[in-house]
Image (cartoon, rainbow, N blue to C red):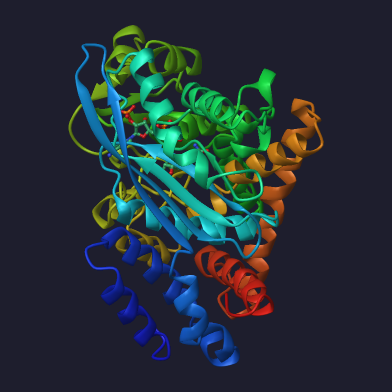
Length: 445
Ligand code: NDP
């Protein structure tokens, strides 16, 4: 780390004890700021850094709800409104038992720079709860969402803070959350949440956008090397929203996706993942991937071990943070992987990223590669503001061109600061300078 930045990082550690994921996300950005520490000392002075690393507002609240047997449960809700220099706070809600303040802060911090990279007028935030939706009935999910929104509604709004989905929060949950918001406020404020259903203010392509966008970004990276996805072997971790549509688009562009996973193991399918079966198992029946392997003769389920043992040309980690460690990265490199693009947020540990860098593997961080989801959310907000709805093809073209622009911005920024080929440096420096410029212009607030 540049010596001028070290005191700032130490201060972040001291002010935010016991938050390892947040520390990791801040460190990753600070390590990228060396090229501007000398040329733009005004950007990296503690006065700017301190504000960029301190959320504007952090809300923690009680979420009481009753299960189908009448038993009362208490969960904890979070919303971290990190930075609104570029627009209203924008970022998803995560429902998963692992959720805590550190995880929400890391996600919100990353979101600030990701949203800046999209070129859309949106700030960064994130929220969620330690609620575990697994095994809960629709009625229980609805009661939980209603209770969650009964507190959250007072903090959000189309000009203030616009949540969306993330792990454990899909179309069903956004529906229950929106319904409760509408009921409490007596306002049909479509732009208050994104990821809505198509008949009530949602956007075409929003469901597909994070996975599609990740593959569009990977395709741009390959094109920069005169290659394409045609004929490539691809491994995608996860089998949720991001993974499903990454698989769909990668196969549409000529790749064979030979493996995907969930939190109980992974499947290898040399014939290529059968997307219709995968969606039936995960989205409709909400079962484990063992059911996929049971019904597909070409597939094998592996309960232990790592999906990154499966040889591939392209790896797309699309499950969760820190799921790909240095030892996995070494196996991927040994097996000939040439490109890694993060569909999830921070799925690769810093040590894994270093292995890829040293081996010359093209690596795209999530804040660039998975920005298509939030970018399409911003397109949904545009449609809501103009009471319009766009066709699928038009919206997908906008997404593709946004991903191309982000790729260009990363490549050009990295080259300008003397780090050609580093998507990490390009993404962090482009995102950081955009946010810092706006903050300087708006004064000390
Ligand atoms: P989903 O809940 O739809 O899917 C998550 C998938 O990851 C599931 O297959 C889940 O398995 C698996 N998973 C979760 N935790 C673990 C774990 N600890 N170990 C192994 N597998 C795990 O979430 P999304 O697809 O929406 O999100 C995935 C990632 O993408 C997250 O990092 C999210 O922050 C990021 N992201 C999402 C965006 C979006 O638009 N949805 C936008 C940008 C980033 P199981 O089925 O067993 O639970």
